Each structure stands twice: as structure tokens, then as C-alpha cells.
Image 1 (cartoon, each protein chain N blue to C red):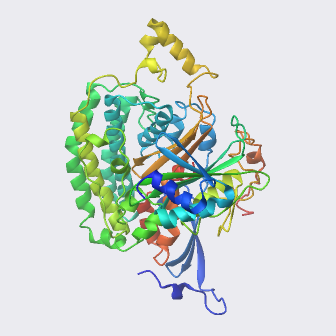
Image 2 (image 1 turned 120 degrees about the vertical axis):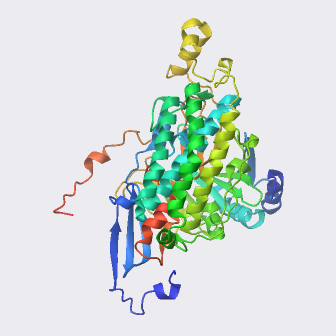
Length: 168
Length: 406
């Protein structure tokens, strides 16, 4: 695939033109899909459009964003390494159970990226082989990059148990 | 040689008493920063490695949601502190893309010089420290002397050696002077000899080569599948370099080569970094001799830049602009949109995903840290090798924990 038009055409053939929306800002071309279809679209993009690299997987909490309808936006940035084409795939998930299917079977790189999104936002990736916290301590209960989590924390740091050398 | 899968499997009754576990880090001289590895060993052979990270997590991305587009540059500086200006350039590259700013030619060239000096800076440390960990102490000192010269160049431009915070939205903190240009010229003149001294200590060093060749082999398919970029991917034969693929700054006007290798082992990564330094030096040389004149900041009329002192004190427009940018409820007018942008940092693709909500503070400032992506492949690179190869593989991936954990 060498152009975004060709990608859109492929997706229209497979999923119909109602299944996704597109938008563009600067050179970022975005395909916005439903959470339920995200995996199928990404699989199609990898298998048939040659997007063999997952450059980035991240999320945003739109809690205080003006005029936002959904709570979490999850973004996949794909690269076709043969042609250098980039594509942004975006999907939305909502409380109380933000869930998505893992893309680990498609790109191994998703392993740690999905763990980080889970750690920071609490978005659960079904089928992930090892979905544990990655940056925060395992006993941490909140999801720190959510907008309702205060910047200075909720005092967890002061309540962590202190382990001395004798006990450890 | 890596062990076969059959040799790694548990015996029929799950008997694994011969294995033992080693905690490598978080405070270990060879990890250089704080990261931890849980190694399962059979004798001296690593049969399983589980990285445990997050010791240096300091909530940079949360801070990015509370500091404005100019203030956050002091934080991104501290991500990959081995090449601080490269982070700053990446951050403002994305912010300028969000605001739709086209930089002045002089600013583009100065930023390009800094980006390439930072590549040399980073590769010198990476290769020097890799040599240090493998017992070649002298080479490390040669590398560090050259790094001092680059620190001096940073100091001359920005007044700070380690964390210059040199870029600003729409330009730079201040213009460079003739003294700075003379310093860069003298660095360009002296570096090839230092590079030759440094590389001759290592590339014909039998012990050093034996420790690196065939260790931690990453195939081209795996490199793409695991999103590796930069020298790690290029050493495995992935011909990708954002300077060529998605040109930014002054790169379209410059003549340089993309250094690649096919072996994908630690030695290939070492050699790619060695040769990239010479290519970077070529770029610095071209830029410094063709440095355009003119302003380093975009026009004040665009209402994007912080005006200089004269403009603030002597003109009403400058005063208003200063007020607008520094009052907490004003700042920049951003579009209600989001953008991803990336540059080829010394370590690979360093990107930022910025969500703007119309205010002067990012709603979301996500970093795509190359160290994080590269450390994820560490377990598959080390399995089957010896315990002493752990430091060789770690050194060749150039893991910077401050960027890894943010």
C-alpha cells in the first residue's frame, strides 16, 4: 500500500463504508473504528495492507476533554516498512469495563505497550499473555494517568510499607 | 551458541533443581541505571530472563499534562539524558507540527547540528560504556573526552551542560555566536582522529570481538515485529531512518548515508553506531559551513514565540505578546486536535503523541520511548547465552532507564 486512499478502499471493501470514519490532521491520517471491530480492522491492515510494524500504542483519557463522548481513546500507529506509509487507527472504550482484544498475536511489540496502557489507564486487553503492571508497583490500586487521579497522588507513597534489611 | 528449545524444556517430572535464580540489579554497576533482571540460570547459561522495570518512574507524562509547551522541555531533557537536546528537538518538532509553525532556515540548521552532535554524544557513551563493561577501560576514557567537548558546545550555546533546554516553540532559546561556531569547527576537525583512536582500540581487539560476535542475534523479521528502530533495527538489516524516510529540519538538503548491517548481533550494533558517528560528523560539517544567516525565531507577528527583552521593553506588541504567553489562563491558541510526530533520535524513533484541547498546556503528552521498546526484546536476545553476555547485550541496546520508565 502506498497511499491512504488505497487503504481506505481496502477497508471499504472488507467492512463497508459505515464501519469506520477517517480524519486527517497535518500528515496524520486516522481511521476511527468501533472497539468491537478494532482487532478485525488491525488484522486486515497487517495481513493485506502490509502494515508490519506497530510503531506506537497508547491511550488518552477524555474525561475533561471538551465535547468528548467517550472516555478512553486507544491509538495504534502503524507503519508499512516497505513503503514507509504511516496510519493511525483509533478506537474508543468506556467505563465501567474498558476492554479491548489484544493485538499481541499480530505484533509482538504490543506486549509491553499494552501493559503500559493497562498500568496507566486500566484498559484491559483480553488475551494478553502477561497483563501485569509494568511501571507502577504491583500493589498500586489506582491508574495514575486517568484524569481523575490527582497529579500529586493520593498519598500512596507515604503508606508504602518500609521493609528493613532484617525483614527482607 | 543458543540452546535448542528441546534443551530448555523442563524434564518430564518437572525436575528443575539444577536451576538457580539470580537478581541482576536494580543497583548493579553494569546496568548503569536502575533496572532489574530476574535471571534463571543453568550453570552459567541464561535460560530465562524477566525484566522488572519502573524503579525510575517519575510520572513525566503526567507532568506533561500540567506544564505548558515551553515548560515541558525541561522535563523531556531528563528522559534520555545522554542526548538531551535530541529529546527537546523531538518535543518541539511535534508541538510545532500541532501549531503549524514553519521554522526559519537558521533554526533548522542549528537544530540539525545539535541533533547530530547528540547522536555522536549518545553513541560515544553507548559504545564506550559497552567497552567498559567488557573490560576495555581505556576506550571508554577516549570516548568520554570527546563527550566533554560536546558538553562544552552545549554550555556555550545554552549556558547549561547536561540539560540545556535549548529549544523553544518556534525557535531557540537564543542565537549562537561566533565562538560557538569556532567550537563546533574545532570539534569537527579533531573528532576523526579521536574516532580512529577509539575504534582502533576495539575493532581489532580479539577479546572484545569474541565477546560481541554472535551474541544477542536479532533477525530482521523480529526487529520489525517488535518495533525496533534506530541502530538496533539497522544492525539487523531494516533500512529505516526517519531522516531519509520522513525528512524534517535540514535533512533534505544534506548529503549523508544510512549505516546498516545484516548480522544483527551485538558486534553489528556496535559497528553501526561507530560508523553513524562519522556520518553525523559529515552532517555537522555541512551544516556549520552552510549555516544560513537571519533570525532563529519565527516572526513575532505569529504570536507563537517568546519575544526577546528589547521587544518586551521597547514595543507594545512585544509587551502584549509576553503577557499573553506567560499568563496562566492565556498562552497558545491550539487547535482541538491531536498529532503524532517523531524524529530519528540516537536511540531510534523518538515520538510524541500530543492531544491539544485549545489551551497552552497539552491535554496528553505521550512519549514513544525507544529504550522501552528495545528493552522488551531483551529476554529473547539473551536466552541461551552466558551470564557474562548479559552486560554485552544490555550495552548494545543502549537502555537508558530514565527514558525507559519516564
